[in-house]
Image (cartoon, rainbow, N blue to C red; front, side, top):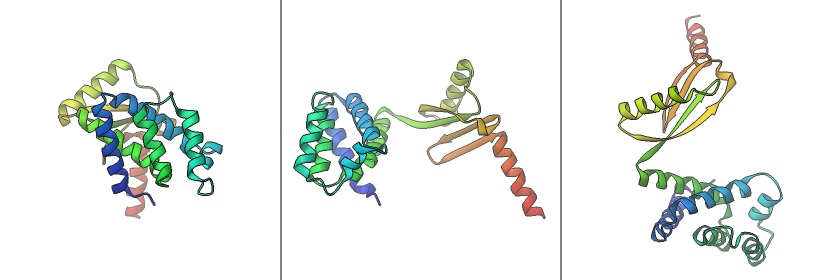
Length: 180
């Protein structure tokens, strides 16, 4: 189980260092990339989380591979996790860091799911309308899911608006089961 409080503390420290060095976006991109690579199933992940491999050897290998490719804040954050035997926190730290970065920019995550790609003008109109209604700026992630059949599913934080055909069919099926 990942300790979210600890992950948030690391993310706050990394965020403060990145802001000091005016490298918030670079550190964000580097951390995201490293997390994706080291979290994906395979030898890199097994090496990174293995408790059998001693810390100095793991540190040397990561330093040799990543030095010069990552911003120093991102690199030393990963190396610190190795030194402290907290490699399993990397994904949670990156998630917390990205949330802090979005909050600092005054934007919130928004996911738009549709059965097919949304027309760019319709997309712009929809996002503008949501920003006006909710009084927020959004960082939009677009997901194409053919299983929705049609319509749209919108997710903003813990709020979910499901106006997809599959969502309506699910609701109808639940209602029919309750009446019988």
